[in-house]
Image (cartoon, rainbow, N blue to C red; front, top):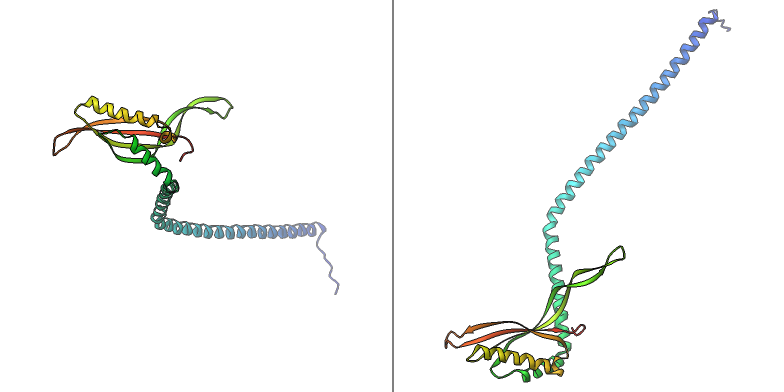
Length: 222
């Protein structure tokens, strides 16, 4: 069957334009709707992921607070273990050289004057601030206080006499004997008198003097 469009050409063109415009609008609305749907979908996903992260963070935070006391205890035990290991190494070094120290003690006993006795003989570490030249980042050098740690041997003992002057003389004589003994004093750089104190026996009321000496080991001995 043959259809003949009897509408004027102007009306036909207007209808075609309207039809095209309608199709364009439909496509635009569809695109906007799709883009909006994608944004809504992404928003829902991001919101859900954010809720998940917050929940996960809260869970991890609770777990951290729960484990923190144990972690602190582990850190304390680790530091304590390191300290004990350092002390053990010092003891092992002394054990390995026990023959040397036995000889040193025998030599020391021959250097102690009469009326003088020792109550303690102990190796310790000391740290002091020493002025040294330090290289700076710009290549220059400047003097700066630097902490230096070294080993010392401390002697504690006492001396008894009727006169304080004589007690000081006996301690000085003991120090002089140590310095003059090349065999005993070969391990040390020097020896110094740290302090003296006047004491009195409770029972007899007799006065005596306690003292402390300190010898610094040569580098590398311990």
